[in-house]
Image (cartoon, rainbow, N blue to C red; front, side, top):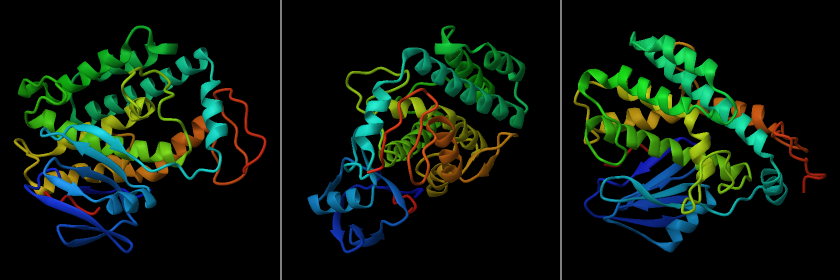
Length: 303
């Protein structure tokens, strides 16, 4: 899965135009074969031809506001040959199965958070282990929120940190950036799998077209948390190496000790196949209880 990111959010002025096999950013040629996400800044203009080229190469376009927080997502129509069948299968998933699937996602996220604390020798490991065991179908006791609070406190508590998305500040800004890049990859994977991004397992937001991405990104958030915690104190997005480190999270998944260990593309496919059993070819079946269809019809940051 392409994991490179084009970041234009820090450009004072920019123009993106199309060219054969890619695009040009301020006249610089950028091939798109290994690009997964484009972060579009408010001072950058983009042509319709460039958008068409990005859609052709399945690149997710995230338009970002002055804070660098995405406020618009663009992605080409899915070319998956089983889109309709998979949308119907998603819609037919029962509530009990959605709740059970959400509990599995929450447990995976808490497991990653626990391994982060273990890796840095932080307090709260046993409590997170307990929350993982206590998570039930639908997460009725809100173990996810409790674990998130413990995780942030254990990783960043010494700095008086409070997690406030989109509110700036060194650590918040780093987390926002890392999550944004990761979300772009999740959206791209959803489109490539032919799934409907508005049919989520748990998240609900009438104004959010990609609520399924908000569900599926959760087990990968600890990878971003680990990388931010590993950065030097005072790290800033103005530093090119910091951005490269956060973009690089998309190329790794968390190992048992909370350290990057394997390609995200491999880990992502394994997670998809364990849930939906989507093969590379042929028919498929869903462990969530859906009826199967009867036939198959970095660039590095610029800022």
